[in-house]
Image (cartoon, rainbow, N blue to C red; front, top):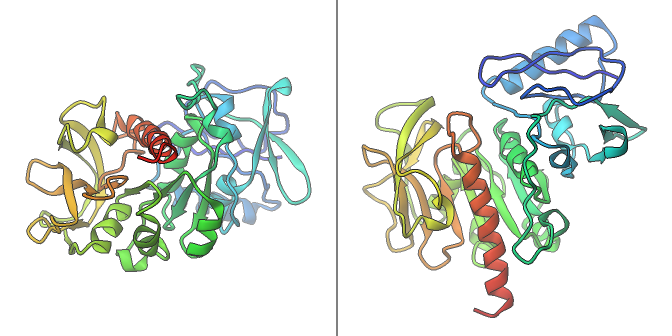
Length: 338
């Protein structure tokens, strides 16, 4: 079997290639795995090139605990990068390893992990979040999607990832998800497959959290205008983000105010024509750009323009945790008929 880890500066990646035995979890911070070995030097070069391209703008971190790696992602693999994230993964604690279930065999792999394990999320009713209905992640063909999934896995959440053109709204409804996360992606909201339709049709009844393009989809769905960032493209840049401690509490609770956030975007919801009758701004930059918003009536529809999953957003994981807690609270209120 082959395990491929790519070395980069932020975050640190390490390379193990052609590994024949899965003996232990390595004390490395970040990892990327591939369960299907290339058989020739040409295939090896092609695979490595594809991996590097797919990870060039992505800080893909390894699970911080073996339990985090148990998350199941069900969708068709469309690339080597997506192939890892989409293969069902099962932990075998007795052997100290992880197995990826492919079409023909169960392959053990070496997983690089932090030595300090993060506790999985258990809902306040005591039920492990991992055994509840899934949170559906709509992947807008963006490498950052798997960073978001990594955080969700580390938090012990049950989630499934689907490309934005792999399923219909009716199929999503039949899955009865606890919540929906709409990922970043290239292009404009019109290029996001079912993402816009998801906000409009499912938003009134299911918690939705949009990231980057996900927020732009929310903005456009409710009458906002998507424009170019006046100051130019913001790719890999950090900015202080300020938030309303009342309106933004459900997502930003426990964060510094302001906090540092990673920005990878060239589009933004225009502030001048912002649809204040439908949405309300919950976070912004020093120069007044919209960094987060939520729906006024359906306050469980919310999103952020920045990237909480980036290493440049030090407190970003807390945002994903807050979303998970909000989903739990929404379920509780719904069951009580509030």
